[in-house]
Image (cartoon, rainbow, N blue to C red; front, side, top):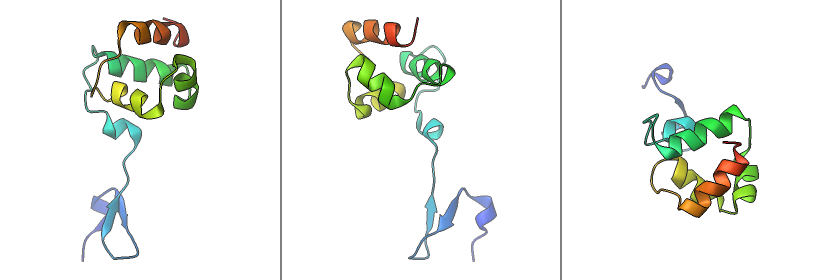
Length: 88
């Protein structure tokens, strides 16, 4: 038997352990100088929802996630919209 206290998960209906990850755990690039990390931290600092930021900037939620995770870098025009939205 597995010791569930040693992992961040639970047994699902099939008896296997399912792990739950917070959004912070999925940030691939924790480099404090990365654009995506700065966007994420500023959004959290201002307590803005991802939905609000996406609507303000005009991007899809998946696009915001990819920016924040460092998978892609926003264009200059999108960065300008982030500056306005995040009051930078």
